[in-house]
Image 1 (cartoon, rainbow, N blue to C red):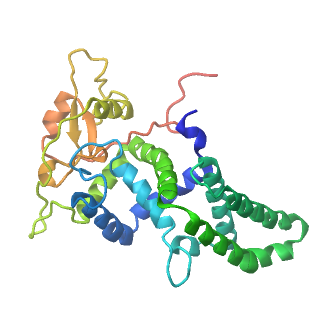
Image 2: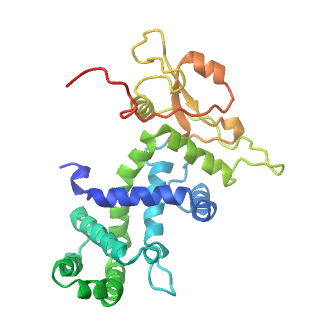
Amino acid sequence: MGIESNLYFPFVIRLYGFTLFCLCDGNFTGMDLFYHIKDCVKGREDPHNLLFNPLEKGLAFKLAEWSFEKMFEIDEESGISPYMESLDNENFIWFLSDFFEAASQSGCFKNVSLIKKILGEIEEIGSLYETNETTYWRKVKRSGRISLIDQLNEFLDSCSDEELANMRGLYAYPIADRILHDRELCSFVAETVMDIGFDGETVEGMRSQWVERSKWPQRVKDILIARDRGKCALCGVDIINELSELGNIDHIFPLSGGGCNDLVNLQLLCSHCNSEKRQQEIETRSSVPQYIRRLKTRKI
């Protein structure tokens, strides 16, 4: 049984959407992301070699974990996370339904009875829409919402750090895959790290090198070849099928300009494009196939 069998897909989409939202939120990138990366570099958080080495559980994976944490970061005054507080009444119920269904399927938690109880209450509230819409809205807006917030907090208080960490890590995999699949999104993430000033910005505001060149493990090469489909990310020449072409792993943002060695900053280039690019920053091309825009070539 593979890891995907423990995933509840609606929650995957919800977490992926929230991760993208966090990446566009200056408060998250300038504060949470900056300090998380700083803690990794200072050895206070794993992995200590984040950005210095190309890691499978690198920045894309950690972004998903940090977004998960942000989603459940409880505000002391309101007793609920700002994310959940921002959801309107029905969306809050739907969010809890997705989360607790995901928690149930994950197998990470011991308090199964409370999960079932909360899912049962959510189902009961939902069924009222067909039988008594007035009561449904009263529950959704007031008593039901308050009760579910209390039960959510009870559940979170009953969970061990290890249980939450296991679920967080479980859902970080598909989010990281989705980020790494999109080369333009990877470029956006890599540039965001530089924009928040970590860590190659001089006093004059110029970006400088702060990471040494790393050796590329075979696994990293395999990931990039798969993502870029064995083709040059700039000119599209088929590197894998050209016996005379070895291919090169390129930093989208050069190390000399403040770039890093994380997978989000790497792409596959042919020798010619790699030589032409040198230390330049060139607009990143999409790695997402053109399904809708692709011309029809055959009839089914």
